[in-house]
Image (cartoon, rainbow, N blue to C red; front, top):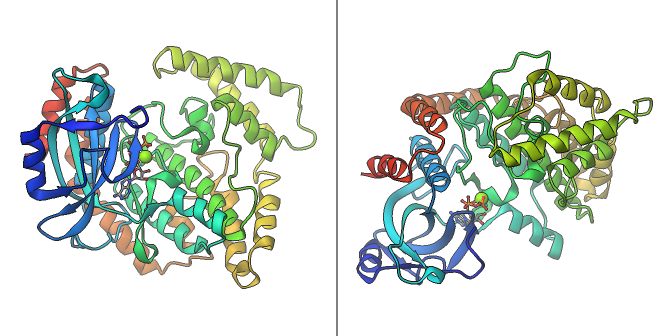
Length: 432
Ligand SMILES: Nc1ncnc2c1ncn2[C@@H]1O[C@H](COP(=O)(O)OP(=O)(O)OP(=O)(O)O)[C@@H](O)[C@H]1O
Ligand SMILES: [Mg+2]
């Protein structure tokens, strides 16, 4: 993570070269900064050819992990380009559109002189805000939040992605861009997957699906492939976001579904405590399960992401926890109903229908979790079947264009520890 305030600098001739195409407000990350992420900065600029305000995401590549994340994002955004929308309007798919990508050599201000680093720069239309900012402002000033419309757009973006065979794996309000007129687009594909990974640490912890907390293993008795498992993890995160939308629409003091503090094991415990265990469950089992869970998470940390526990014990944990956390989660409907009751009277019927979806989006077992496309058929959305068929077809068409990406992702997966320059060469090949 870039230290706060740490700027990125371009060599003068490179600054001049980038400036031919984009009017920059300053050095990357120092000028008009829109955001700062794990691997660099997002700065606004004006695209000279069109006068459009764009966002330049500078992904500074200093190690193989960063290079892999950059490659993931590039491959996804290139593959998910919307065939039917021009680059000046919002996409039909609800996925942010890549306008341009190039490489540049950058220096981190605090490193001083030296060889510098390669950076991949991804250019997209500049959004007005992201959803986390929008929700925070709604709570602060009491602005209305179109919760149903936002939830629909998020689920449509996921239905499109999943039809394309891609899982985002980091769905959270910070990664949803809000454009003027209330259009949402999903951004940040640094963790996305085309379903080739068995398991790796994904999703920001507060929005992480329980099966990923438990090691990304399929539940013991159900057949669910890696792709469906990854898509279901997106749906869990979307459920958490839908709760946040409801809370903002209600102006509730409680803004999120799960407390946003503590590590993965603490969060998992908080989840169980918030929604269970139901009366009659053997509370005596809980401490053992927590202890095993914490030990596993520790193992994973020290083993750089490789799950080490034997599959049989994972299945036993999953079964035990599932038993404690019966579906639908016992307190979730009541909490959601309280939010609906606090919302303006005119909004309540639609919000109640949205709240009724929550236990299905947040089903504990990924095999039981509703798919994004199926959720769109339910009230309050009731998307027309023809629209959903068109969305599915668009997703599948993007998926077909993506066919090559599968081998690329598989290679990334196998090449754990692949030298930086090999991944960089792949990146440079894709943008020429
Ligand atoms: N096109 C855009 N318009 C406006 N703001 C943007 C745009 N793209 C990104 N941002 C802002 O920059 C932030 C970081 O971007 P992004 O999530 O793509 O980067 P990241 O490095 O992957 O971040 P993180 O590591 O925090 O997930 C976003 O949360 C958003 O606030
Ligand atoms: Mg992000």
